[in-house]
Image (cartoon, rainbow, N blue to C red; front, top):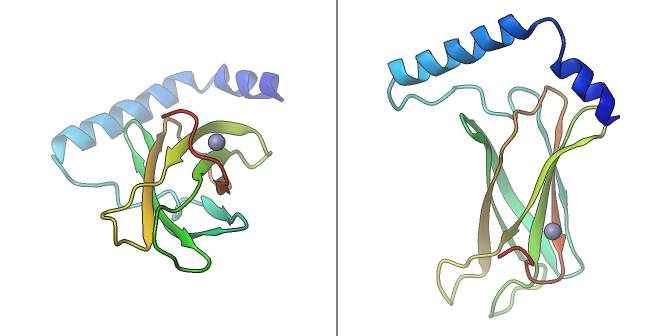
Length: 146
Ligand SMILES: [Zn+2]
């Protein structure tokens, strides 16, 4: 599977790819802070949410940036209760053929002690081809990477 991707990377369209990147860069610098109108979702990224026994995933937003896909979301307990939202989220981007392109963990952060939901955000440094899936999975344990 890995090999397949490498072959695609070495495909003869190299010059074209570089041209696209350059065009993207120049349009970015030229337009200042203008954002890319096409979100990853509009370009065919499906967001899949996997809850844990205690915690469900709320709204999730994904933005394609020059450095990758920035994911913002929130999560809350199934039964609202005071205190921290337990666990963390595991984020993975999978290509249409099911390969994991990038994955990372994100901790829950509450805006304040009273907040019933917790936010999370992370950067997945990839560009997802159309038909990719962003899977947001709540893990019951605290985040290990932070
Ligand atoms: Zn994880």
